[in-house]
Each structure stands twice: as structure tokens, then as C-alpha cells.
Image (cartoon, rainbow, N blue to C red; front, side, top):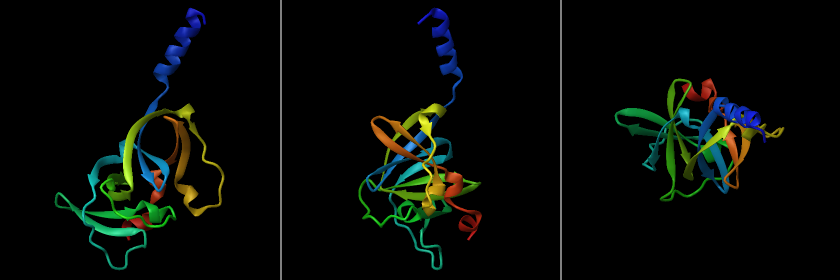
Length: 159
């Protein structure tokens, strides 16, 4: 490779944006959500049920004096429920100006992905496919990348 080609490659890498994704597990699948939406990750705490809430809403928690609605990611994605374990986490997110908790089986790591590392989601008629922003192969794993803005509609967020 010539010096000019090397400089072009370095310049391309310097201007190509890298997005960080927090990866987590549901069943045996790896998922990712943009770190910019994540406020914090909590160990599992007791969740108070809310009568009449949507079936994927587990209830509410008190987070430093603020009431936060917690949804079950497994239920939202059409999966069966799982037992709570020491690895179970609640990911606190900001979606469309609202603070929401998402219950996941475990949190894995933060990965860096460039746009060219993210493939389009395969076409599907599955209702949950609307939440998929893309897929990426990283660290010998397939990660399903979630579009958090589509995760919950306005009606879901506002009751």
C-alpha cells in the first residue's frame, strides 16, 4: 500500500463515526442499545405492579425519589418469562424524554461499531422486527441492535 493510500485509510477511519452500544442478553441472544440512551444499569430491585398496565409493563420502581416504569424486554419481544437471577439487570433509559427501565437477563459489555459494521435488519413480518435497527458481528457474536425510539409507542409511554 502506498503512503498516499495509507493516509487516505487513516483519514477515512478518523472521520467515520463510531457508535457505542451497550450489549445485553435475552435468552441466548445478544442485543445492543445505543449507550447515549442509557442512564445507568441497576441490579434487580423489587418492582411494584401497576394494575391495568400493558402486559409487558412489569410495574414501577423508586429511583432516588423518582417513579420509573419498568418493562419486560422478554415480553416485549415475544419471549417467555425467565427467572430472576444474580445477573438480572434493569437498564435505565431515556426514551423520547421519559425515563424507562428495561428488565434484561444480563448486561454484557460496551462495543464500538462503525456504520459499515452494521447490517440492515432482515425483512420480516414478525411484529417485534420493527424494534430492530440492524445486526452486527463483533467479538465472534451476532448482536441484534435495538431502535429504542421504536421500542415503545407514545401510547405505551403515556398510558
